Image 1 (cartoon, one colour):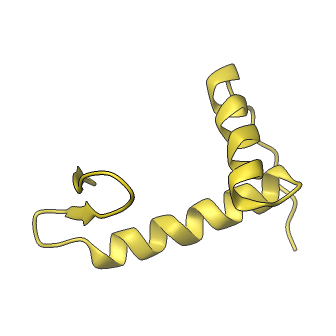
Image 2 (cartoon, rainbow, N blue to C red):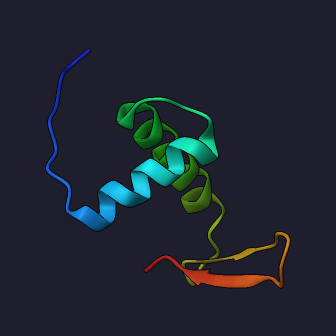
Length: 66
């Protein structure tokens, strides 16, 4: 497996730390793998206007991917 390094700003580092807890993982790499997998699913489900409707615990939210 190839090794790649990234430089993140403070905001992104905080987001990654929060997602470690949310995803139940211990490494930045695991967060990035899960985030990319989620992004792939979202991209595949987007409509012809490049948007999706997220339905969760609160009111539905339309997200524009473009």
